[in-house]
Image 1: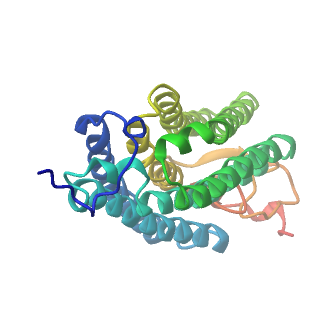
Image 2: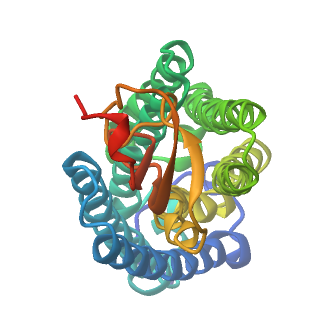
Image 3: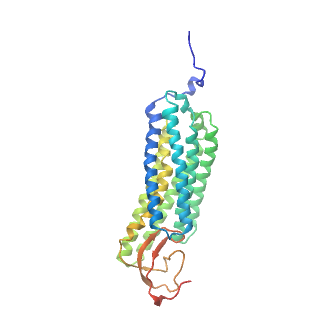
Amino acid sequence: MSVTNSSTPAAPQDAVPSFNVYVMIGPVVVGALVNACLFGGLVIQTYIYYANFPNDHRVMRLTVAAILASQVAHVICVSATLWKAAVSGYGNPLTLLVFPLGADAAILFTAITGALVESSFAFRLWKLSKTLILPIISLVLCLLAQSIALVMTVKAFTMTSLVTFEIDEDRLITLSLTSRLVCELTLTLSMVWYLRKQKSSTRFARTTTIIDRLVLWTLETGFLTSLVVVFVMSFFLAMKQNYIWVGIYANLATVNANSLLASLNGRLILRGVPNVSLNMNSLSSSGERIRNTQSVVINVTQSVGSTPGVFKYEENVDQSLGSRD
């Protein structure tokens, strides 16, 4: 006499992929653990930011607060996904035929974090370049990627089969990841280009040293996020049937958030640089402009990347330069 468990959802045999715990539950566990570590780093970076840069523009400080709030919700969603995959759904592979609700919600908070971070970088690019073309292109790509992610969130909540979902939404998911990758590369390479352009126009060795550091930071933070997107896209296109790409995607938002905080807190390193001579015609403090465009001596203590100015300094300006606007 055969006994069946009526509580287990029935599914057609061909709809159930071969279950391998190493590529189904394993990536979720590893991804959640890495995400927890990255989140801890983000909390520390946020504390360092608020403790050391109280004079940053209010918009920037609110943006950092919004990113942290989004990441708190994100890490909760990732932890809920881990619980569903490794605890409450233990021994029942059918529970992984659809995304856990925590994973569905994590897509939303990944989109929110991406929009906040990439729009901040696009604004900094505009302040540095003084042109609108590249920042607007970056914002359009950012909005496209995050809008598709929002659509995917709605569809993920209503999915009945992960395999069917990945096949039906293959183009949209690929377009979202591609748009995000192109946006990240556009922002990174454009910032590097304009920083190098300013380096070629200066005659001061210490200014050159600062710009070299900024170029290095921009490449490190920008390419790291781009590399995560490449890994997500590669594993999604090659191995849709497992959760490897899901485990990597779980860390995309946290890496993105850390990249912005790292670029902001990197200004602390510049505090060790002595007085530097710069042309204040090209770099202004917090949007203010000095009427006389002579080279002046300033004491670098705040640094680069604050809002609304790309570069923010504590200035020691000679009184002969006149008043400010």
